[in-house]
Length: 275
Ligand SMILES: Nc1ncnc2c1ncn2[C@@H]1O[C@H](COP(=O)(O)OP(=O)(O)OP(=O)(O)O)[C@@H](O)[C@H]1O
Ligand SMILES: [Mg+2]
Image (cartoon, rainbow, N blue to C red; front, side, top):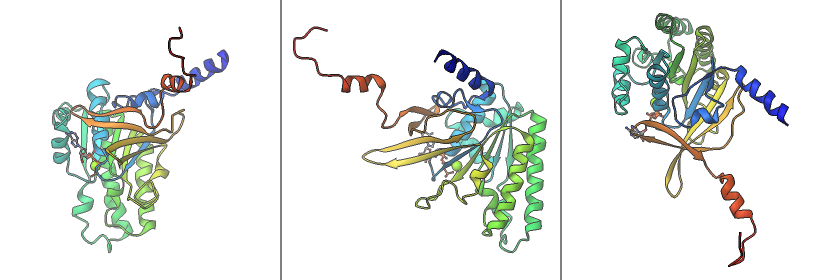
């Protein structure tokens, strides 16, 4: 038994971990994301994906001395900056200090009015030049953390599945090339039964975490780790909150603590009996 535990400890240590910056999450992931992992953060609208991404980059830059790059395909960086400032995270300052880089890829949404007619060649040409921008910024800053928020944003207005596959293939190649520990988001369309917008995004990922907002008697935010290569992790749902300091993981949902279970299952003591 001792040797088994010892061997497990050595194996866990062999993989370098990157702190997530989210209180409680590192503990679930044996210390953090595996270095170089590409983690898909999937969830419905307003589940907290962007805040998790911001927290990962902000804490990385300010607490762990790791520069990062944020690629936005959904909201302009100014909007992201303003939202993050609500948590006291000053991304503009970090940009000035060259600890964070921003790539505005929202152009996909505004400039490709006629994307339906746009040729695959021209879509890929635009995409490649944007991805080249990401690569240059990663190299300039020596960034080890990367966020792509969101992946489906790269394929906005594209309806052809083959074109989408090509787009994600290009993005996947860039992610492997830069070698950062990457957090990328995708949306879950309610009732679709899929864990991503197109059912393709997860193939780029070495890890998948799913966020949800459940409305039972009281609304509750929850997260579960669906896959994380090289990591022995719980498959439980974990409750999380979004407060003044950002996202914080709470305990597992529906799992009683060991001490409570012992209390519940131990035979009841008779009144007046001594311990
Ligand atoms: N300052 C704050 N304090 C507490 N909760 C907040 C704060 N700002 C936002 N929220 C909560 O977080 C939600 C938005 O989180 P976020 O933008 O990360 O979601 P998302 O999953 O990225 O959404 P989308 O699908 O629109 O991209 C809001 O709907 C709100 O419930
Ligand atoms: Mg978002």
